[in-house]
Image 1 (cartoon, rainbow, N blue to C red):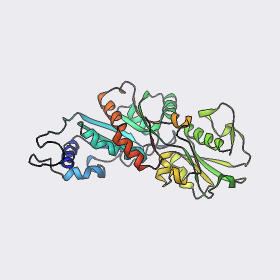
Image 2 (tube, helix red, strand yellow; image 1 turned 60 degrees about the horizontal axis):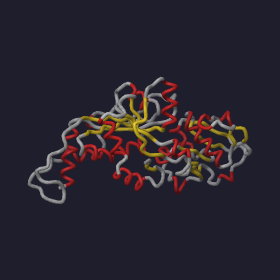
Image 3 (cartoon, rainbow, N blue to C red; image 1 turned 90 degrees about the vertical axis):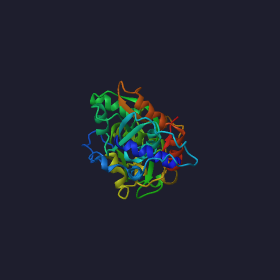
Image 4 (cartoon, rainbow, N blue to C red; image 1 turned 45 degrees about the vertical axis):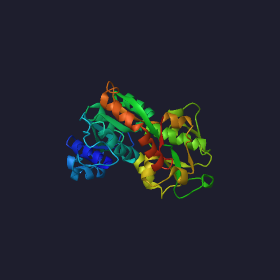
Length: 318
């Protein structure tokens, strides 16, 4: 009965809309070749297809679920979210039935850059986005003049160094290339991780503002190749190592615990700093819809999904 009841809720909710999500890398990137941006209502996610054909729960059914006469939750409206494909949109897919049970229809649109997900929230086209950490959000607001705020931290993704043509950092030689993301905060994070592992030394105090110009010692004379974040995993067969955001590592098939040669530890300051958040336009952070979205994403059900799915590559933030 429980399965049919939830299916019935999803069926009713589809009449209100559908949800998609994602984010990319370079602040100077073009508008996304978004998988979901041009999709129509018929192009809903696979997780909703079962609901398209399902009949509402029948009153004569009996079983281990809700009472036969229980009515679906009163429809409250649609929540639109722009997000990165992995893991953000995947996590949001798990949130859909939980929100539907409360009467909310979740519609997710997947983007593959870091610019448009913020712009569509600033413009009011979307209610929220889920793809970025706070340093990037703050930097984006300062550079773009936007008015986005953190509505709640959901998870963090340990930054890692992954093998390319080499698998041991000790084997680095003069002229070897290491690829890193080129957007401001993620490049700094990559450089700090390289410094933590003795590959380079940065100017004192640069912290999250670090760029390649702040490298003061590079004993092995490695070349730092700066690329748009989505491109970094694509050159792994051409460079000695790649330093990746957690979501791009997952998309490239890397496991933090099994494949990385070094990564940020869960108790590190970086892990706490780079928590991925639900971002909304200032003034909307306490709205009923946003509060419901954040509460569900921080629920035990979503925490269990994250812990059981991503092999340490995504860690719930509590």
